[in-house]
Length: 67
Ligand SMILES: [Zn+2]
Image 1: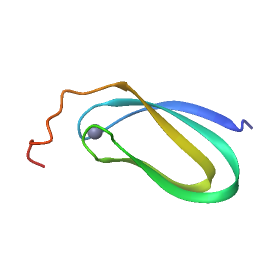
Image 2: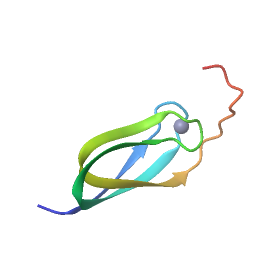
Image 3: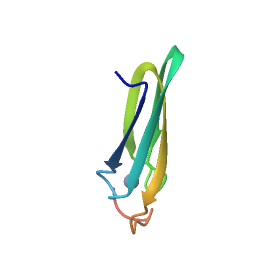
């Protein structure tokens, strides 16, 4: 069992891609990460981890797009 994990996620709204890394922490935490480009929820968690998202591919997205 690894305490470190990383994987790629793609925003299902704008198509931006993120490299997700997580780190085990002592305290259980509940939080979420939103897409930096379009603001859509990438994912949320409720466990003793902290996640970070590094933008690896920025989609061509305009905030003026209809939702
Ligand atoms: Zn997005």
